[in-house]
Length: 415
Image 1 (cartoon, one colour):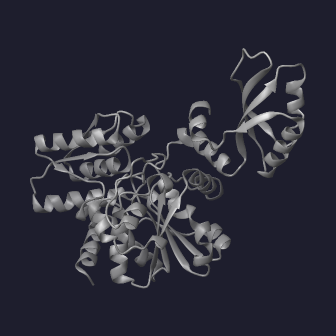
Image 2: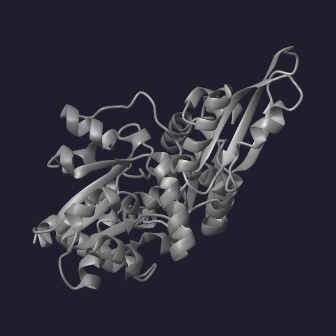
């Protein structure tokens, strides 16, 4: 057994002072759908509802072992890492200063404060995370505190690797395939580092959001790459640059092992897991389940473990998730319709709607036109093919319209 595997076993034992192993649950619904033996490693059920507590605790424990006087820790995070650090600070009875962007939702701030209690201080600074990170590192240096990185740290990777230890112990055998979400890369580097040493026959698939595919870019280029733009929707995995140390430990990956999940499709998966299974997953936590349809032919008859990495979902975002899911599934569209300014024009349009078509939004965009008025109209339906029928009717009646559902610029300003 490798030195990393041995140290991971020690880290896993130490974690039991904090919480019991998260459940590894066979999912009958997914297993039946894909003809496979599919298990969910429920990292959404840790005390802070994400795996991040493992790395934060392990890094803090090892620092204190090397320096018993270490009593002040600093991190920068808008979410799960902050909550993990806060929980660990309270456990060890040390001081924590947690920097969060000013734009962080109050729900996440409140949860971080709950987990840390009197042990932590939250500093809100910076509109963007890079500003927050720079402020935290400056403060850390001036205060003589210890900075806890979210993923680019050997002890953090060791802590995240404990997920792999629990998978083997709970399953009682090596899984055929493990599907891992990737953001900064700490979880993927840790779990594969342990399992490749103890279960060499296991295969891996890695999942990134389309709008934050930094591992894909790095593997393609053969070196670290910083993405020019990142879609922040999958906030737990939207990282512009994978960590240097995780990348170093993942450089054996080939492009065929990486999948990219569209943000809107992730919303479909989140809603299905909530409505069918009663499982609340944040966007990053749904990544491993989201790609199962793409892997259907590869996993049939196999034992598959999907790591659901987190469940810190703010239900105020549910309307947005539903909206994006409907648009991805073709059940909701937005049109700009040129409506003739004559009596009966609106009634004529309404008669074209089918029994399953509902108007979800209706707004005049141009109210001063003499001959035509531009209307923003949102329509929900029960089957995607209903829109084909509607558009055929519009064309036959000579209506001028434009589908803006997939136009990112217009959708941002109008929808």
